[in-house]
Structures are given as structure tokens and as C-alpha cells.
Length: 348
Image (cartoon, rainbow, N blue to C red; front, top):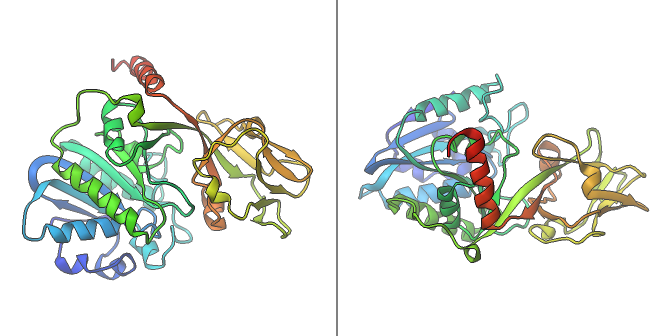
């Protein structure tokens, strides 16, 4: 399924995301040489409706048509078939950002292994996966290791940084085995601020020669740790208030993203006395009752929580999740956690 090219035609850079499927045969890895040998790897359109990454790269590469790239750039353009229809993924496809763990035998999993095989053994400087949100969120960066270089890379994009290890099938976690990697969350598709912000970041990474040796001070970072993934219970129906559903969304629920909710906050409505949500922790345990309770048809929080990636898009909620729950993490806590992980793996 993977095409590999060493050229970037100007005509391709004139295509928007919906048009790429007419210019490319499918997922494509572009290997573009630059002045520095260490490679910046970037992936875009892992979700076909998240177009900011492609807008960033086509704008950037157009500006380098008459001059060399500051460093070598490998660009993976993912789900162009879904992009043609403006969808996250097509029916029957596996989500392109849930295929990077070597535990599946779908065509999409085999594609991911082809991409990783092309990168194995190469001098990789950093990896960037560019995404959008369907709900209201700030621009933020996600990392999967608390390595100081990962933190520096993320801070270059935003002072808001989220550390997570679940889901563990994502591109950024696979790339973390090779080099500092980050996922950029650039707001909603079509917002020009997301494109300009991400382009400035990519341009900075192209020119960056090395990561700073000194650590970041606490005041430089708002660091959060994802502790649970909230999903609908299997078979539960979702909708808006007033409909015959098991879980009814708040009308402006996505405005709760990155808001610290106190105990007793309204999180939605349910039909019946049982909780229609599940919360899964990093160890794969279902702990929904730890975070939510049902009282007179209301789903309320049992403990202070901070959600992220809340969306009103019911298809995305069914396909993926309702949201993630986070806790604040100081840099001191992050450093201790990273040191413990290094000792456990024998890397210290």
C-alpha cells in the first residue's frame, strides 16, 4: 500500500486535502534531502478530516522550491482516501492512528510496519504528527515519554503539554523508540491560526541544530498526565438532551476541555440508574465508578477532573472515545517518574 518518492512536484503542492487522492495512489512517504543529514519526520492526514498538517506542509514546501531545506525531511501523507470524503476514516478501515503497534494484521497495520521499516536505522532528529480536534481545545502538544528532549520539543509548540501512554497504538509512541516525538493538536480544521502556529513550529524544527541541555523551569510548562480514557458502554446510545438515548451530551460540552471540574459537576444526563460511561486507566482497568456517579438522571463527577478532547461529534465518540481525563504533573514529578522508568528499563 505504501508508495515511496524522492520528489515533491509543485503540482502536488497545489492540491488541497480532498484532491490528494487524485494525485497520489494512496499513502505515500516522501524522502526529501536537506542540508543537515539528521531527518525530521512528519506525518499528516492520519485522520482524513484533520487537514491542518497538509496545509502546513504544502505551504512550507512551496516556500522552499528555490532553496534547499535546512535539514532532510521525510513526510508521510496518510489516509488520502478518507481525506477525499472529509472523514476521519472510511467504513471498513482501521483508524490510521491506531495501527502503529505491531499487534494487528489488517492492511493498515501492514502499512504502518512498512513505514517504520523505512525509518529503521536512519539518523532521525525528531518526529511530528499533526492533528486537529473536533471540539474546542487550546493548541497543545502530546508526548509519550518524559525525556527532557521530548519536553523541549513539545514546549517549542506550546506551554500546554499532555503526557500519555494510552492509547498505545498511536504514531507518536511508535516514533518515540527512534527519536523525540510529539503530536500537535492544532485546534479545529480550517482555522488559519492552527496552520500558522504549526508552520512556525515545523520551521523552527528544520533549523534547530540540537535540543537544549538545561531542563525547563516549572513556570515554563503546564504539564498534564492522561490518567483515563472515557468511552461509552458497549451498546449505549448517545445523543443530545430530549432524545431517547442512554447518554445525553451537554449542549456545549466541548467547552469543558482543559477546565478543572470540581466534584459534583454535571457531565451529562442518562436514562436509567446505571452509568452509561466507562473509564479505562493506563493498566487497562475499568474505573468509571471512581470518576462518575448517577444521581436523579444526571451523570456527575465524583472527584475533581480535567477533561480533554471532549467533542460533540457523535461518530467520533462512537469510533474512538468521549474524552480523556487528566491530572496536573509538575516538572519535579515528571523528572522523578522519568528516572524511575529509566531504572526499570535499565537505561539509567
